[in-house]
Image 1: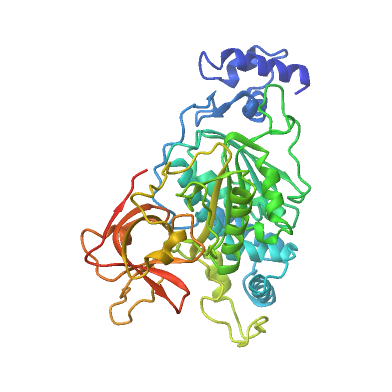
Image 2: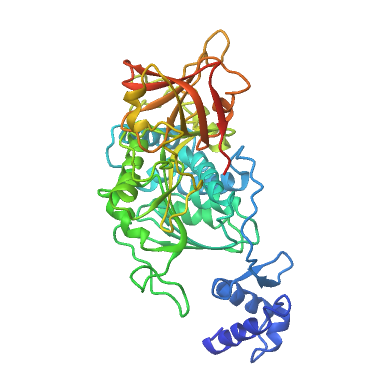
Length: 501
């Protein structure tokens, strides 16, 4: 359709959008030459973001709802079959019909081993076509799930609208994009810009093609350092420089650890946030990447003062900042094993040379990855926090001064920042004394709450979720030489209560 007729479609849509649902059959009658309704429908789809329209199942278009997303989220149990089929179709196309067996399967398994080995040695990973497919097989499901759990932290307090502009920096093979798509309702209007320079971009395109009609992806094949949002359309909000478009969500998922200077990159992208937007940073739960995430968070929020930590590592004491090692991560239930991981794992054969392993015999489960464990940080520039709480020095001890309280009982407030870190008792398969990392945002040394005697008055320590704020009364402070940390003993004299949002 030429530019003049396209503008006629837009004009009619703008006129009728607040009167009744837009029917392509009706609009076609008002356009010069009366184009086929299917052509009008395609134009409306292409212009939906600029007109703030969503397409309904009956083929009509209506304005996107102004209300925030009302989450009905109960967790992620499995990677969806339609995406699994799309990935397997891509594997068949790129590797062959028996992609999981013989030489092709051996090649993929060796590639995954190399990726894991390079990652754990903190060496840069180069994503060629085969590496991108191997990464998708091993990490697509957990990346898909993690994106939803983190997005829920914003949607639960009503901070995720149905009209969203999202920037995914280092989008990889598309796990976060698919997760965001499936978390949001079908009537959400999403402009999803993805930045990915590697061969993973080809996998991203193939998988995101499976998303719905109101999800509008755009891929930029460039690096995080080189990318800059384009000039906005007339009337669009602008960033801090006055010329860039802004985003409701800016997502860095499993990419900060691959950047040479992640602090400066994150600081620059904060300028592209909408006034009420959130920068979401996610990293794997292992020690180095999780601590690296906290280092970026602290550099941007505490040292530069460019953002506020919305969650989960709240600063409860004004003017204080944490300087402990910062290893903190969440854990969610395992996913069901997806078909493509099972096929690759079961396809291992004696021809597999065991690259990257000391034992050349393939191990059952080596290519299955269904753990959902992750570190995350939510940063905002409007000062808003998940819990608007300030500790009271007349009522609570400060972790920065915990050396004053060793062998004494104290009252304090703390954020729960782990699931139990204690090893299970083989006899009972339960933690003998559950241990939880806690923080108030002032500590220079790790603090752990140790539940030695659970009662109805302190059970909230065990049952509280990761990131919950707790009030603790009469905890016994001890120094732990083995961990070089403070233990806060929670026993029959201790009372623990959640502080509600």
